[in-house]
Length: 509
Image (cartoon, rainbow, N blue to C red; front, side):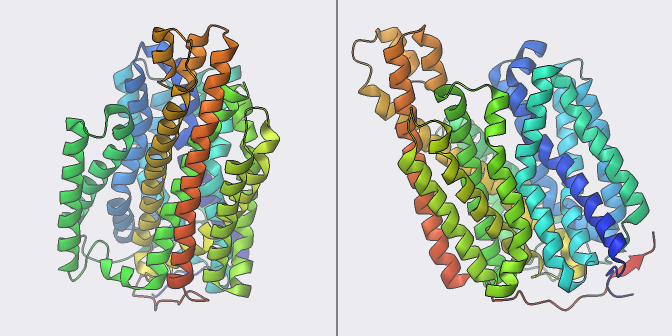
């Protein structure tokens, strides 16, 4: 039986609800623990680097396993893979919430990443393989809205739980979402299977390459870009990536057909998602310290301050399919990128120590609108390049691109911010005791802790942070300008071409 398109609109709504709830559980867990770093350190007597490993091991295992598990979902059945992923993710999240030691917490977070890698590609693959062509763009718009704004929503809810309860309550939300998603999946989501050979060698090489390269981006800023572990990881990642490309190009049934990137759609979609998510993640690295260290906000209030951007992004993701239908995918993506760049210009131009929240809000709203308009057609450009039978791989490619972009943006814009801060504060440390000045050079949080109420040093640190902020924003402007030109020249066609479906077995509920 070819295809698995669902004609009943009520079932399609249930499918969309179920996969978005599952996706929300995964996305919220990416950023949720960030707000509880001090509590985790006190609870387990752990160092800052150990706490960061608790957070990062989830994203590394998630990113590394997306492609292999996406392909296995196509082969074994998307519904069984989704249900198995929800079970693994739910049990691991509960174990993390009840963890008696740091070792249990690390293992639980790793298994949560494994479960998330089983869930995430399937959520999008279910949409692209079950929704008819005329409804697919709208459904992808909803999915991208949740994927883009869900992290901020999860972080806000996590901040509320940490402030008013305990960090252990952070894991109640994903477990509850898993239970609801399983109920919907069992009742409404159909199964579909593709009989295709699994590329085990390609899967192994992809895991090694992703782990190596993501590890570099995570550890480089803290361990040092020239540290032995960083350089070793870089070499391993690059060698594995080259081996993966070489192997895949020689296979009749590759894990990922790299020849697809000769086409405009998947190439421009991947580059756009990589860049947009990189800039978005880098902006978050800049905004939260601004809210907390410059404006003096609490973590909860800082997270709430980001919500307008997330809401606009989610709304724009839902409107993007209509815009693409009117003016074309390329024009919609280019308009979104232009708006995002304008938002960065606004924030770089008007931010100041005394300007407060209103000095950055217009730029945040423009960024949210631009990213929302870009993400949906970029995602559809990737998924439409592969047939329905390979949607698990297409969805995994989409997700891996997002994860790489996020890690790259945090590393790049975070490094620019830090370098700009250090350069700016050097000229503002006259008359400051050498020991205090040395601490102040390490970052704005260190400077405020060492200031001991000294207003000149506090002001110097805040002004230096704003100087670093502006450099990071202008770097983001340059990146989005290059992306804008690239999309104008090599963006997808007005309407993504629909690839002829391959043979797929649809299995009843």
